[in-house]
Amino acid sequence: TGAPEAAVTLAGLLSGAEGPGRDEEGALALDLLVVLDAPQLDVETGAMLVESLGDGVRLVLSGDPGVLGSAGAGQVFADVLAARACPRVSSRTPDPGPVGELVSGIGIGELNQVEAPGKEVVIVPVRDAGEAVHRTVQLVADSVPRALGVPSEDTQVITVGHGGAAGTRVLNEALKQRLNPGPGRFGGFDPGDRVAHVPAPGRTVPGVV
Image (cartoon, rainbow, N blue to C red; front, side, top):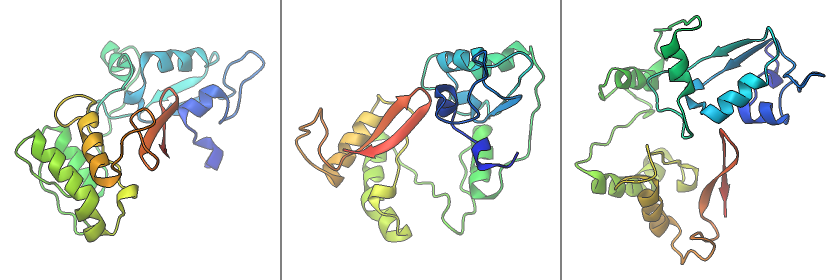
């Protein structure tokens, strides 16, 4: 419809905090639902979603099957594609700009330098996980604020998993030591630490202790 309320979060839609609400039978009061970033759907959320749709409602799942899947159990989007039980449309139009070029390369297993005059994409080679952690701290604390004018508190670091030598636990510890050292009085955290709160499945909200 183009109305601002037409785009809502999935967590908000299922909880009733956002979207059109439900009809007298408890189903979502809509005729068509398009879910973006569908690879992020886990089994529990996917089941809740389907059970919330009334008869005749059309469901469109949209996403890149090559991206990292849900942090929760299952791979709903990949399983639906593999089952070939419903129509599927493949779009081969890459996203514009340096980020789109980077994504297109990663999609075929290549990590190439891309033309990015505005520094939208900067690839920093490292030799091992230890150097990756060191360079990440250096980028967040020094290089990015100096070169791009983006303060450390506005920079988000993303990695593929919690464990490992360059996972979230190691990175968070290294970044905390540099940016907000402290004894971790509150469950390992101190006032000023940045955290990620998950109030509902599929929804992550940043916050500060």
